[in-house]
Image (cartoon, rainbow, N blue to C red; front, side):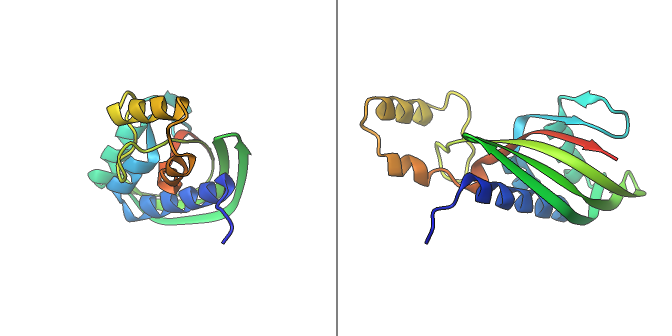
Length: 164
């Protein structure tokens, strides 16, 4: 079986993100969205730096309920361990009880992160992370062990912008 490429992982991460949005799956969204998520777009065109917390709160409270996410096009670009996805599609649902249907383009920047503990995103400064980095820098870490820790759940969306 061929090894999965970062491009494959980006397509999978986008699929997971869209499914989580549609299902209102706050746990999955929390895993996929980086703490530094920035959102630029409707309704005001402003840059929102608290986007992750706002997005999770809207899904958790059901202020925002998605009923359709239809992807028309997805472009994926890779540069090293960073990727960019450009989504074009239709989003339908309700926001604060009001229905919406928008054709949107989102540009998302993704970065690959290593997990210190399976099932939990790496936190900056994790002790296990620092220890693994020291071992790897001294040549004592197993490259395959580090590689196994990287999977699609570790691609986190950092920037999201949308235009109507």
